[in-house]
Every structure is written in structure tokens, then in C-alpha cells.
Length: 134
Image (cartoon, rainbow, N blue to C red; front, side, top):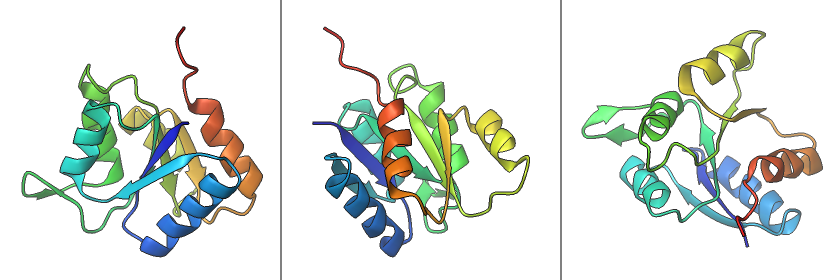
């Protein structure tokens, strides 16, 4: 069973995403906005994909505020976690934002909030999860 780690500071969003992913996608879901926990889950391979909110308003790492872009950069810069797919989630999608965010962060994909098409949401996430190696 594949696990999605939701990094999101809005608990309502996190709950909605969890419900869609477990009910429709048959996926396991973890949720945290604690950056140390995100790093530890990633390093220990306890998730198959990370759903990363771009604008985390409360998250701190080593005492400094960080957003989803920064956390993604840290994950992608570390060889231990670089191959773990990260999908950015943002409500502030203007033309050009998507490219900028993806370029800046090194993320593997991008989903805009609000999520209207639940099936597409699940499909987009499942498509990015790496297949099991034999």
C-alpha cells in the first residue's frame, strides 16, 4: 500500500485530501506540518510521495520559517531524499507560477487548490508514485 505524506498547515484541507486519497485512491495518508518530521519520514522512506503545500504559514526548520518551496529544495538537495517525488499544492496559481514554483523547488508535479476533480487529483498523485522495483 502506497503512502502519501501531506504537508499542509490547513487542517481542513489536509482532512479533505486525506479523505479523497484514502477513499478514492486506496492510499495510506500521513499528515504533518512539522518540518523535522517531514525530513525524518522522507529519510526513512515512510512515504512514497509528498504533497507539499507551498505556503506553510507556521512551519519552522532549525528556528527559521520555511515554506513548501524551501522544504522541497532541502529534500531535493539531499541524495537520501532526492528521488522521493514531491507534488506542490498551492491556491495561488497564476500563469507562470507553476513553472516558477517547479523550477525553484525542483518538485515533480503541481496541483492547484481548490481540488475540484477528485478523481484527477488521485490519478495525478498515483501517476507520480514510483513503481516498486522487483
